[in-house]
Image (cartoon, rainbow, N blue to C red; front, side, top):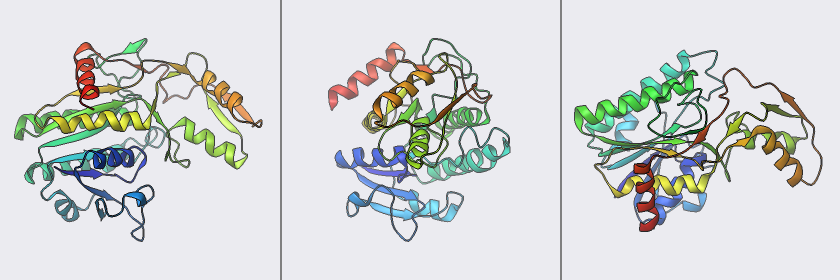
Length: 293
């Protein structure tokens, strides 16, 4: 089938591209390509189509959407920290443009949108393991906008019968994680260690996160290609909480030379605990995709 990956040259998106090509589908990647060079997909050149442009450019989006059946929407212009003091940037650069994009997709005959949401910010202050049926209570502009985008996908499902799968992803880590992006503590710490600068640690033993390997995320997200008509919401996590200080100890034990670090209180835009679980219906869906593989 024809699959369009918006933001497919990014961290998670590029791994999804690899998995979908392995499955034998025809892939087009839309991203900002400088001088026609890719960051993570040079090994796939010749196996897919590349299209460079701005997400806000409706004309080029129409070209990208021609004859596409499934679209993965990885484009996001912000992170939890950047929008904390400027909530309007979420509306202007993410929510508004995404709604325009979904409208164009529906007009182009796209049958399904796949959207990576945020397991770390969608649910807000919660305790224990979080399943998909828990009421989300996001307090950061980033999480609020992710949840609003989910609701607009439900709107397009009801209005034009365009299906959508939503994946609420934990703390992704692994190869190709950008080191210059404040979103992703493992990449951020590695950047400071490589530069010889001080690692800033925010939180305590109660600051728990669910760390998920990026290739596992990409594999599970290919489940959306098995059914054009289903619309589901999935948590993508391990169900295991790791405190920020336990993670620091892993770094200290693993890296073969000491590095400077400083521990600070948890920041106002950080949740205390995010441990993702799944309800039995979602578990059944994941068992099916694992068996099919």
